[in-house]
Image (cartoon, rainbow over all chains, first blue to last red; front, side, top):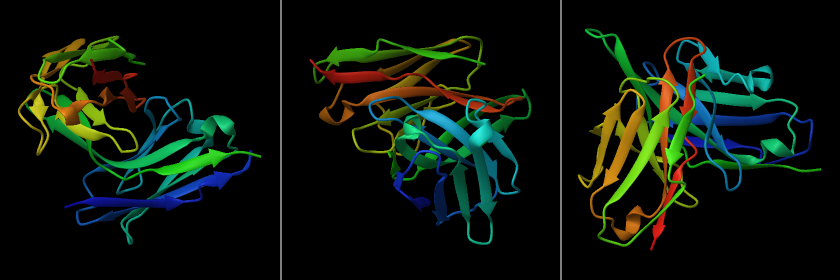
Length: 126
Length: 110
């Protein structure tokens, strides 16, 4: 049973850097995409970005200039850094495991996130 | 960038009734569509992937259908634990690789 445990600072001042880490327990780290998603209070889900076990990353273009996602395969952990935070970055931040399935015969694919962390509430306030 | 829309924004349903939720993509995503359920204070839970495959442990009353740009999540007989927000999601497997969620449909008690 794969579980994700996440942690990090919950209260930041404007201009500081948000830093969160997610540890993967009970399953393989390779072969998956490891994502960060956030949810502002009362709003929907926004994907921040992802990384695979080899360190290849994809970021949401709207956040790309401020986001760094890194991986530590020796600890089965991945981390999020978001720089220059403002009140608009106040949200619950989730880590999640992404599965990409490619159907070789048709080149069709599908992607889903099947395991999620419990979420970390991050508040940005002066 | 593919934009996902969902309708209705809120769906009021009585327990035991059928609920039909819609998700539309701004261009074809083939069958690359997942559905999630989120209850207050909880992380999202995967319900459906590949447009129509139920995730492990998901009850048979949840079903997904559609392909291309139009998708439907059907809950055949609503149980009390099904009142929640439902999100659809697609993924670009070409640059820029991007996960996109719909804005969500809230299913509440009528």
